[in-house]
Image (tube, rainbow, N blue to C red; front, side, top):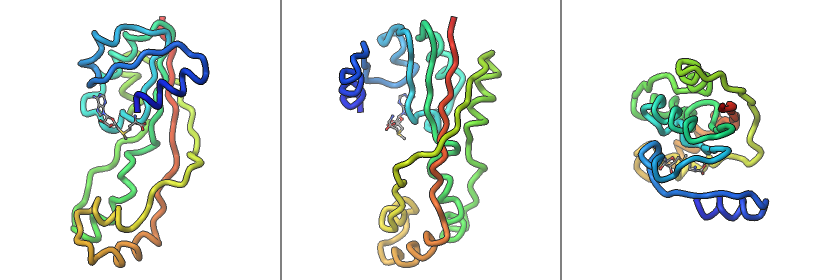
Length: 161
Ligand SMILES: C[S@@+](CC[C@H](N)C(=O)[O-])C[C@H]1O[C@@H](n2cnc3c(N)ncnc32)[C@H](O)[C@@H]1O
C-alpha cells in the first residue's frame, strides 16, 4: 500500500515520504509534512483522540482523511442477527469522527460522496466473514439479494496553523 501511494505521488510530481508503522507510535519517526493524509484507517482505530491529535501535530498546512460513512462491515449486521442471533452495537459513522474532532478543537470540512467502484459483495467471502460453514453459501447468497453494501464515503479535512 505504501508502494502504491509512493507511485501515485511520484506520477503526480508530489514530494512525499512513507513510514511503515502504527500511528501514532510512528509519529516521531514520520516527522512533519505540509499535508498529512490518512486513507480508510479511522474505523479501525480504537482511541481516536491521540490518533487525530498526532495527525494534526504532524501537519504544517492541513490534514485530509478519507473514510466510509459508517463502519465498512456494518452492512453485514442484519446477517449476524439472522445467522447467529448476534446484535451488534450501532456502527461508528463519519459524524462520530467529526464529533471527536470538535472535542479536540478542530472543525473539519466534511465532503460526502459515493464510491464509483462496486464494492465486494460475493457470497463465499461474506460466508467466511460471518464464520459460517461453506455449505451455507447458497443461504447467504439468498440473504445478500436483499442487502446492498453502501458506497457512501467522506473526506474530512482541516487546516493547521
Ligand atoms: C480498511 S484497511 C485500509 C488500508 C489502506 N489504507 C487503504 O485505504 O486501502 C485499514 C488499515 O488500517 C490499518 N490500521 C489500523 N490501525 C492502525 C494504526 N493505529 N496505525 C496505522 N495503521 C492502522 C490496518 O492495518 C489496515 O491495514
